Image (cartoon, rainbow, N blue to C red):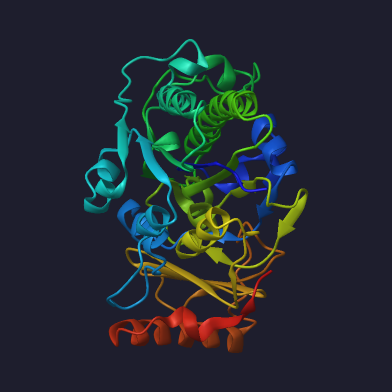
Length: 391
């Protein structure tokens, strides 16, 4: 049974580790965990850079950020138009609204989410107001089925003001913990090794968690609305992060971290009539694979992707490459070679084994150089890293 409605929820700054479905046990995310239990979870969905423009260039054209320039890319929105879909964008991100290809949506709703004071209710938060605007679009669609509908919702999310009701963050702070302030500011700073910095990291984690809890409640409200509007022909829902967020790991808070997993490992959950329940997919997936998934769903097919044996990405001065066995990170401020971590055992990337697995580190260093060479030659390196088609 094909969905008449596809809803894509993209949340900026949402790292995979923030959700219970990806191993978080510090606080609860029941709505997103329920979505995961009713659909398919991709355990190894990775970003390609820390730039939003790169993310949308990859997600909407299928071209990896590290591919060399090439012509003739097919745009996701064109393909959906050809399939007869009405396409609507709801967002609070000015950068996304100002993209030239955004005009390929039939309608665009921009929500000014700038907040100067803390919200007392979840729906009054910046992210709550964006999802409320999305709910209005869905409500307007509910009475008509002649044309299939595609709603893309992009939330600044964890990169907008941290304005969730303060009791969410306070629920994680004990009496003997440092005092939680009331700032709405999103942190972006290096972290030094000191007691004061440790307190800052802890409190930042509490504030971040409060935002995630507010997001979870808001998505739960959208999910309930979808069930009410289309009880017999369920909507397909795709929920993913677009960039992660460092919470003190590897000496940083925010997006400016080197190319470690806290910045690149993102949640991806898909639920719909064509999607099997309680399935966890282990293959490597990146931004540039999203359009393939969505076109399959729009074409009344079970989502599948091309299986890869390597994923890669970049931040200024830093790169990563990941395989089934290894995660390799290079940093501009490191004098001697890259760092090597065992996958999937060391997902926190805490134990660098490059010095004792030198041959593997050298191999991944050569892979990174080969990616650069292919990009300079205008060749898409991911075609050379293909194993087989995923089912």
